Amino acid sequence: MKWKLALAALAALVVAAATPATAGPSQQAKAVSVNFRMVEWDILPLTATKTRSTRVTFVVRNAGKLTHEFVVLRTAKAAGSLAAPGAREAPETGAQGEIEEVKPGETKRLTLSLKKGHYSLICNLPFHYGKGQFVDFYIR
Image (cartoon, rainbow, N blue to C red; front, side):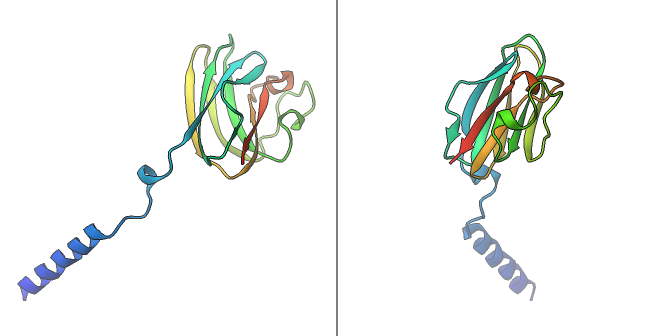
């Protein structure tokens, strides 16, 4: 009787090993990298601001003299119309992810799985957005 249980367990292991697993993190599509340089008071794209990939790695280098942050917002609004010029901060409605505290000279990465659409990429530290530190980004 024990040999039947052992044989059944062995058969289950063989079937499990032969069955393809569902796509996990290591099997997901590779992320496309998009590069940005942050300075006072701009976010400068170093690669295209449009992609067809829904898995994106944002590579952000702070070439400025102040600390910045990088916030990804899904929104229908243009990046420059999220708040009034000179605003202390923009609303972060639709936030998809963020890189906090990118110090001068640092490069940081953020990988996100995003839906097709328009995104506003902003620095939302006090008064940075209001001085023009934003850019539009699209996934087609």
